Amino acid sequence: MTVTPLPTDRPPSFPEIMDDLAKAWCHTPWAASEMSFDGDAYHRVFDVDMAADVRAEAPYRPLLHGSVLAQIVSYHALASVLFAYTNQHHPVLAALPRVDLVEARRRFLVTALELSLLKPVFETRVPLKLTIDTFTDKWETHRMAFGVMSVEVAGGKHTARLEGCVNFRDAVDL
Image (cartoon, rainbow, N blue to C red):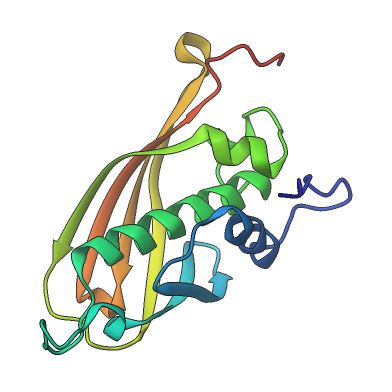
């Protein structure tokens, strides 16, 4: 794997961050495609192979399963927080030490994920919209920051709430 350092002349773009993550991620029945940031929310479209697990022994109408939803929500959260961190979109993230993308990926952790499967999703193009609800600075006491994020999936057919942290507690020379 090649290391993609943060550009020195500008923050990395959302596509650059997604390319970096794609190099580190395993094969999945989904692929991240369109992405954007509108100033308040991080948007992403995932192309999901809904029929990947349909077999003669289990013939059913393909739909977005909770396990795949958990994967794409977690992936989108990581990419969005990395983008927010590198572009200093949130004051707490902007105050954290600057490290390259590989190191930043190691430090951002999803600690809780709550999915609400409200209506079935049968579409293969699944849009996600993530908003950062809060980030709490615990640098002085823990060398960490804690965040809460909300995700709307497929126009509100599913929702997710994530909690996560940015952990700099180990022996990093800062």
